[in-house]
Amino acid sequence: MKNSITIRQKELLGIIYDFIKNSGYPPSFEEMRESLGVSSNQSIIDLLDKLTKTKMLKKNSGARSLSIMPLGYQILDRETLIPALGNTTAGMPAEAIETLGNWQTLSPNVSQLQSDIFLLKIMGDSMINAGIDDGDVVLVQKAKEFSSGDIVLAYDSGEATVKRFVSEDKPPYVYLKPENPKYENILFTDEMRLDGKILSVLNKGDWRLIK
Image (cartoon, rainbow, N blue to C red):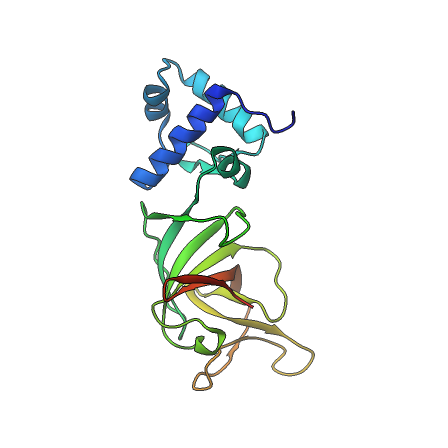
């Protein structure tokens, strides 16, 4: 079976999940060895490689870069863990500061359990007509391609803002549009970059999709 998993692999996957949920970051090799009751790093490496090849786990360099993929959450039958990266603005661009060690669970009905997602808390009222109010939390998915009309997380000289991305065949052509008439459009420049799409917003205790 293509997506089969051994008892030992599932045990390690569960250890990684619990460690991230309880501590806010993935376990080290030593912590995985102790939790799994093995004596060598190679045993852990072999299990991680198999979990990675079956797309249940994603890893870069080092154990602390581990992240569980959608299939991994499906195998474990547990809620998705996503990082909360602090605050960003829905007014003028401002610095978004990553808050390490802060992860939250996300139930499967909120999104399609896609990878590279994180939470941001919104500060400001420039997106209120899109249903994003001051103090709301938004779910962001990192992306490389964007369409006109997407609500995006954008960076301008290292400072972040959430706006609607607009690209059209008339001036000003490409710009970031606030959803509040008291704010002006922000012209797109070479210093700007789009980092992610806003998928949904947590407003008054309920998640809803962004359009």
